[in-house]
Length: 111
Image (cartoon, rainbow, N blue to C red; front, side, top):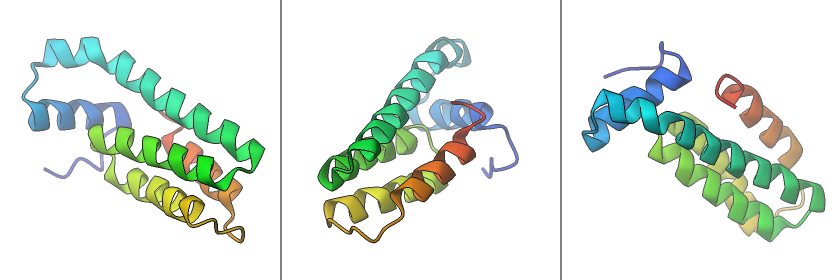
């Protein structure tokens, strides 16, 4: 089912219900925790970005990618994956700040 027209929260709810077979009441109870985890991963990425530690940026990108995939937000996970790969490769020419800002902007609705 194409859910791109839905709000990010509704997309997460649909994904979790369909992917994991969790009843709606339970998903609604779990949603704040999902969002908190996503916020923590984003905050972690922004913190290591300030330190300019490329390996740490790659690891934080990996964690955020996983959280986004678990919630069915695949197009945002692709951006996190780029951060992960570039950081782990030690690419100093990548605009990590721009990538992280773009990701935050796209996720603003639920962050």
